[in-house]
Length: 358
Image 1: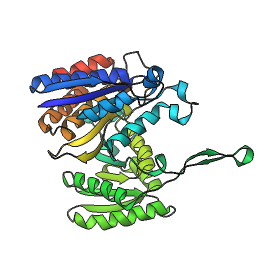
Image 2: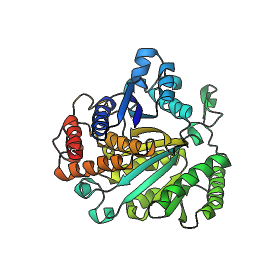
Image 3: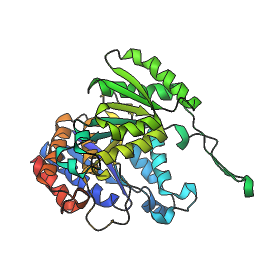
Image 4: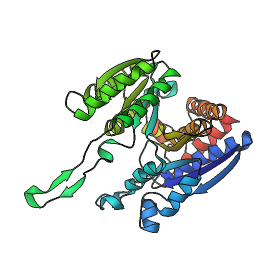
């Protein structure tokens, strides 16, 4: 099978962890005799430095030509006070819009080898295995009007949270479809006691639910959901929510695993005729410029993102399982970076996964 993949390493440790993700991807392609066609482009801070924009036209072209895109991390402190259109994160929003990816899937799993690395007590972690499904193209991050206007005491910042029925329905169906292949439970998170947007959200979710009679549905207000994630995380299977809530709660969920460096993510959109999904794949963590270039960043989130890409965009279930099994073997062997209380370098951890794949 031909695998046309675009790599966008980005900023900070994104370059280092993406290199190890690609190392594993190349190893899998060789082992299973796939043809890997790999290109590389610019996105984020590095793109601003080299082209003046966080999402160059050339990167847009490469993105549309690729079957899937693996990304690193984006953002640098030097851009913290830059205008919105000159910030690295604007490139990420733009590429999501171009590809129409509307669902961000963030798996949260507690590995036996990492129980002592989590801030939660071990007994709370038993059986934790969930997917947080975040709507990715609506809400405050995209709604209009938006911006800063006025002067003096009347200077005002405006953002608009807005969702259509169709946007809510498609992310809801995605969550229910995922749950059917898991433990058949969906938890919808909203703020329907205050926000009209959430009231529509809950109503549409309840209207969709009868299409999936084999899946149980419950609802949580977002503040209660934040609390339940640390009080009883094992109760969750698939959790679905709007964009900003998902952005916040998925980072909370990442701490459960012991390190934010462990979490992969998949941003997927339209399904192709062959069943594969259009997708962007990236670790959840940020660019961590304070440790960039030191060779100590955890690459497992990036490698897990490669596994997700193999599964969702190429339908290569066996290859994806091989990567995930190898990562667990590496964790059990203790070949991990210092965020997991290990001594391995970024490169050593990546090479260990390749060796475990065989």
